[in-house]
Length: 70
Image (cartoon, rainbow, N blue to C red; front, side, top):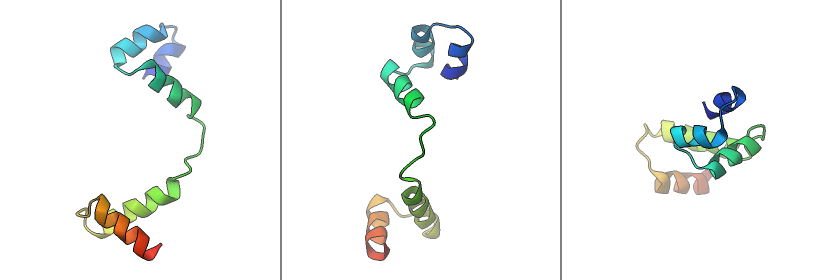
């Protein structure tokens, strides 16, 4: 939303005030927008494990499963 409003000519400070995000957060996302996620494979493994255990495992159990099998 903030990206589109900026392209339409609104001031960035006004947009960020309305949207409610800090300016540093906006610039962080702009900088990393085209970057590939280096943790995408790990995120997929975590998601698959979470689904495998019927969405009942928390981070401790998921971490234990990852360490056991990977």
